[in-house]
Length: 109
Image (cartoon, rainbow, N blue to C red; front, side):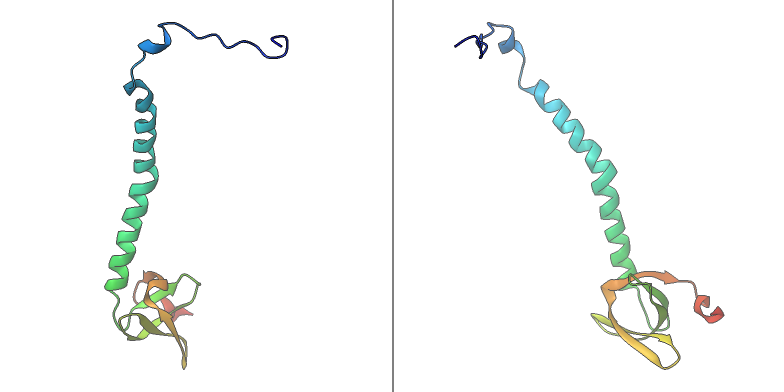
């Protein structure tokens, strides 16, 4: 039967000499790389968006994640009434506001 399956031979003391810490170093290094390249920038972005949503006020010009641009007419805890054209007001959730525009941006339409 050894013709098809090679025999597994145990190696003596050479394999037992390596410590357990040497195997963890690449894993720890990989976690540190992921933290600085993926996790930390995402946390910073979430923190900035939360600050933006909390700082919204009536009269601000905003753009939503859906691409609508308009001026905030009314604001409550969870929703905003945004005027996107003359006499056209939509109600959107505050969390869906992507960014704040400088004052007067939407006047030049």
